[in-house]
Amino acid sequence: MLPAPADPAQRAYLGIDTSGTFTLNDIQAQVLVIEVFNFYCPHCQREAPNVNRFYHRISSDPDLRDRIKLIGIGVSNTRFEVNQFREAFDIRFPLFPDRSRNAVRYLDVRQTPTFIGFVWKTKDMPQRFMHLAGEMGNADQFLSEVLRRSEIR
Image (cartoon, rainbow, N blue to C red; front, side, top):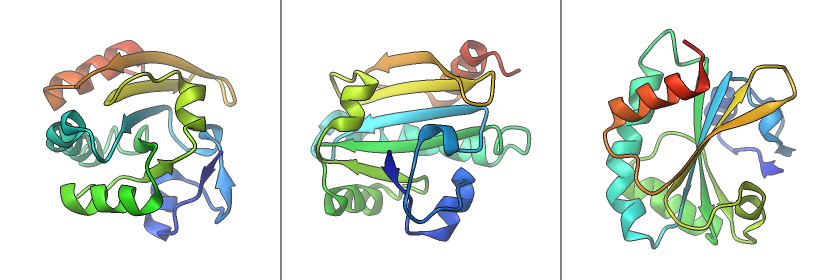
């Protein structure tokens, strides 16, 4: 369970209409990529421009913008820290704090950054197709890998 974004534009991006909590199954997309980061992680800070390029590449492609969504989860971070990360690196996609580490325990994350991909081949049965511990590197190559592994193209 994640808290719904306060920003209506971010709720619309995810396709959720709640102002309470939601689950990954509520997100309207075929593919969800989750970046697990930490505000204090120098690797996450260095990777932020690549992640932004990945997000902009998806959101500017009419064939992909409704099919692939990206969120970030700030492990051990407060809402304040997540908002500071958003502002410092001009992040446009939804970010969520995970101070309690419940989400990262569920996702089995051991380091930051980590990128996890889920694909919905049936309505309520997401399948994990990617678990990349470390940096994504080149955004275009990473997108190609997401498309290949998720098999949505």
